[in-house]
Structure formats: structure tokens, C-alpha cells
Length: 244
Ligand SMILES: O=C(O)CCCC[C@@H]1SC[C@@H]2NC(=O)N[C@@H]21
Image 1 (cartoon, rainbow, N blue to C red):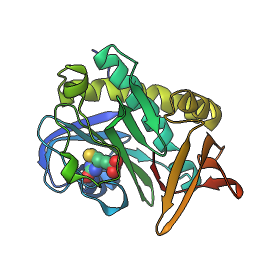
Image 2 (spheres, rainbow, N blue to C red):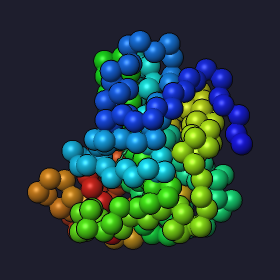
Image 3 (cartoon, rainbow, N blue to C red):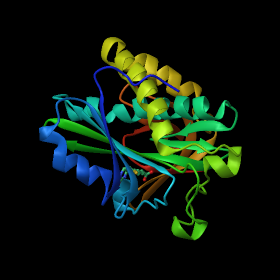
């Protein structure tokens, strides 16, 4: 069991609509960084307005982080959160093989999506929403046809871990990476993220609304943009869905 990190509060709620919505309701009343975890969500949200399927037993939480940082700094927290998720999954499973990070902010296990991250900004807070398929993945029919197929920790690794235990590990790992980000900046986070990146050096497709670009995934830059070498040259992309 990990030690709960100093300076962070926690709430574990039986049921909410979405921990993002609950976090937005509570943010101004909270004394400091707070993890709001829910055992059930009735209206969980994914990136780009998608629904997030959240059966009981899976992990759902939002970290409410007070901040006055500009949007470009806030956006880099998805990499901090992705590293913390990766480390927490290693801690609970005892295995690192099969885990990788997909730009911008998914965690893959055995090539399937096991966790996702959703950032929302309020004037004085950043909300970092994290969902992990601990015991059950949505069916392929419940996600986009071209998306990475969802998997669960239980189905791939045979490891059963509860959301409360996972929260302890995640909060501890997040606090470590957050400290590194605040003291040393993005560079070490970027290096660590790249070392765990899925499909580096391979051809991927970036979809930005109706525009699609294919290219070799070379790196992420100092702003966290994915850098592709395409037939037209190098392109750094700030926001897109990536398809393998
Ligand atoms: O689309 C994604 O990959 C991001 C999924 C984020 C889901 C989590 S579950 C906890 C938090 N509450 C929500 O409503 N969404 C996020």
C-alpha cells in the first residue's frame, strides 16, 4: 500500500453524475488539491464530448488542482497524469511489459486502451479526470470502430484491484511527478513519457476534425505537441485523435 501524499485531500463518493461535474461544483470550496473518486458515475464523460463507459469496479476520479497557470502549462499536466497512471499500473500489477502511453493521454495495455485522461479548466483550477478499466472494458461496439480496442487490467493481467487501493497508488505517484514538474519543468516529464510511448518511429494517422495527416511519429516537442514527419515535411500537432 502506498502512503497518501501530504498536502492532498481525498473523497470517495458512492455515486455521482460525473466526477468532473462534481469537481466543478466543489472546486471553490476545497482547501487544496483534492482527489474526488466515485464508485459509480451515471454520466461519465470522455474526450471530445464522448461518453465514458464506467461499470462498477472500474476506477473513476478527478484531481482538483488549484492553479493560476496559463493554458499551455495546464495542458502539460496530461503527461504528468499519464506517467502517474503508468507507474500506478506497474505498482498494482507488478509488471511493466505490455504497458505504454498513447499520445496525447491514453494508457495502453497489451495494445488495448486501459485508461484515459480528460482535462477541464476552471478559472482557478485544473480538473484532471482519470478513468481506468480495472475490472471491465467496454464492448468494442461501445467505442468508435477505428479506436484502439478497450481492455481491462483484470482481463489482461488477471489482477483484481479495487478503486480505493488504486487511488492510493495513483495519488502517491501523481504527487511525485507533480513535484518534478513544478521544480524541474516539462523536460524530465517529456523524456520519461517518450521512453514509454507507443508506436514511436511508426506511421500513424492524426485526425483533426475533418482533416487527416499521416506521418512517422518522431517525438513530442517542448509544448507537448506530437511531431510527425509527413510527405509534406515535419508537422507539430497540438490536438488530434491518433490512429494506428
Ligand atoms: O476519453 C478519454 O479517454 C478520457 C476518459 C476520462 C474518463 C474519466 S472517469 C473520471 C472522470 N469523470 C468523467 O466524467 N470522466 C473522467
